Amino acid sequence: MLLARVVGTVVATRKDPRLEGKKLLVVKTVSPDGKDDGNYLVAVDTVAAGFRETVLIVQGGSARMASECKDRPVDTAIIGIVDTVCLDEEKPLAAAARK
Image (cartoon, rainbow, N blue to C red; front, side, top):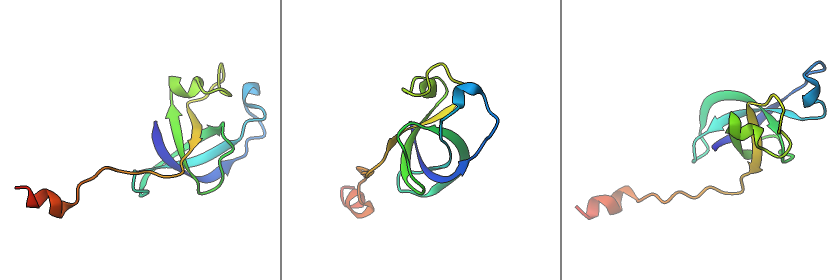
């Protein structure tokens, strides 16, 4: 799974019939602290994500296992909307004090 932010939408009037009715969103991968990684992807939205929300995405075979993506030509799927991310990182001062 990867963290990403929704940055846009894709409108495709002609597409594979198995993608009819599926919302396609442009996402940009982000680091756990929310900084952009710079990679843009088009993902099928399975959770009704909104613009600028941080989301969980999966790719490849995992994307095709998402509930609305089974047996569809999907490489990236949005499978969750992130509320918070907490990292268990030591403060630099605390780590230096132990030496």
